[in-house]
Length: 239
Image (cartoon, rainbow, N blue to C red; front, side, top):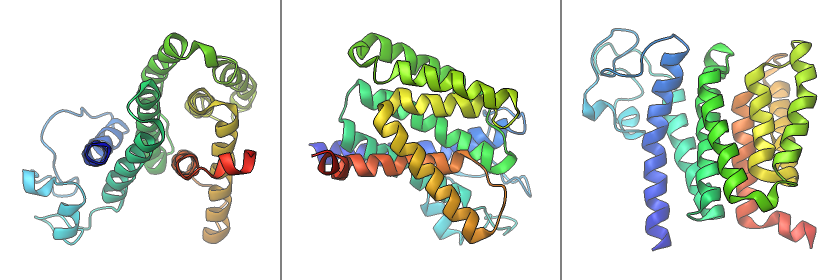
C-alpha cells in the first residue's frame, strides 16, 4: 500500500512540476497563469500530447512540435525534481501534518527556484501565502516543537533583516531561509544551509562564476536533507 501511495505522490509531483514551471515563468513576466499553454517562440498552442511531463520533451527531441526551437531543460528538470522531492518527503514524513508542511515549503521553493534562475527574482506572492499557512499549521499541530522550529526561525529572520538593510539579500530570500528552520528545525535546517552553501561553492568553482542564483541551490540543499533523513545518516552520526 505504501508503495502505491509513493508512486501516486511521485506522479502527482511530476505533473505539479509542470504547473510550477508555468507559474514561475509567467509570473515573472506579469502574465496570467490561466489560458492555453503555448510555445513562447512561435506562440503555437500546445495540445495534450505536447504537455505530458518529461515524456513529451523526450519524444519531441527537446524541441517545439511546430517551430522546432529547442525547449529549455528547465522544463523536464523541474518536473523530475518536483516528483522526486515529493516522494522523498513522503518517505520521510508519511501522510501527516509534516507532509503537508514540507510539501507547501518545497512547492514555494521550486517556483522561486524558477523565478530566481530566470530573472534573479523571488516573488512575495509565491513565498508569503504558503509561509503563513505553514506557520499556522506549525502553531496548531506542532506547538510542542516551538522551541526547535518557530523560535530559531524568528531569530534567524530578525538577524537576516540586517542583510536586507545592507541590500545583500532580498526579503523573499530571508523568508525562505527562516522558513527552512521552521520546517526542518534547527539541526536539519543547519544541515540544509550547509548543503546549499557547498553545492553553490562547487558550482561557482566549476563554472568560474562570481554570481549565481541563490534559490536553486537551496532547493538542492533541501532535497539532500531529505535524502540524509531517509537513509538515516544523521541518526548514525548522533548515536
